[in-house]
Image (tube, rainbow, N blue to C red; front, side):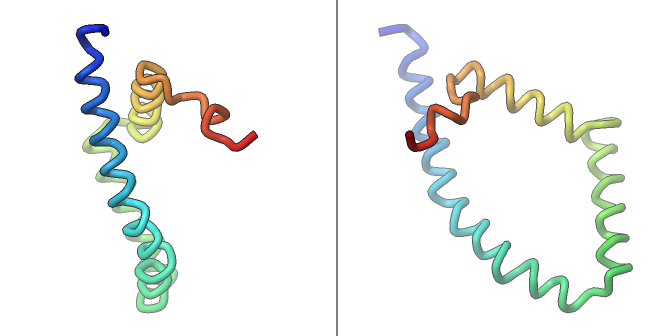
Amino acid sequence: MQKDEPKKRQLADSLRAFIRMYRPHEAREDTVLFPAFRGIVSEHEFDALGEEFEKKEDQLFGDEGFFKVVGQVAELEKQLGIFELAQFSPK
């Protein structure tokens, strides 16, 4: 067994626990929260919020920060051996 194996296993267990928690959370956002939110704000307000989020993203992560973070996540997925989605798709 490699010395990093226990750490990898612990990380994998933590990621599985996060996914187990996040799936129902995301489902409620998509089916309840966001549709209700769109029903109480105007299209203009919704667009303005999107612009504010973009500004905050640039402040936190720099220009094109979202894409930099996506690249970092992809690199972590490669290191963990979970980057290739085909391995998780049914045959």
